[in-house]
Image (cartoon, rainbow, N blue to C red):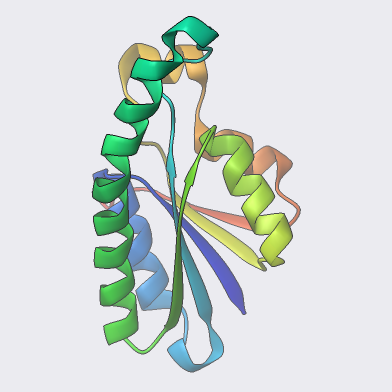
Amino acid sequence: MKILLAIDDSEFSEAAAKSLAGQFRPQDTEVRVLHVVEPTVISVPPQMSRGYYPELEDRLPQARELVDRVAKTLSSAGFRVITSVVTGDARSVILDEAAEWHADLIVLGSHGRKGLGRFFLGSVSEAVARHAGCSVQIVRIPS
């Protein structure tokens, strides 16, 4: 089974990783840990791009540390793990990566955005669940 674990740096993603590790047998499962680094600006005019790209580049090492930390935990549990850090819109990237990799399942936290960001931009997990070509497991934080 091929599972795409889409993570951000939130407690919801941590719950998703723990859920995955507790539900699936490592010998039968390959996990791809994916983190999407989203631009902080939706559209950047060419004259502003010089300041935009370094900001994005500065966030990539933190993203790599995040996926490596989750991958190490899953690898220690016996899972075959690969990692990816991709830049773009989280919804689109998760859906595209799952399709290209032929994932059997996408696992992600119920939400990472808060407040107005969630209201205006929508829920990534909701968009993935609606448009994915495979099953999607949305994990909530246990109460």
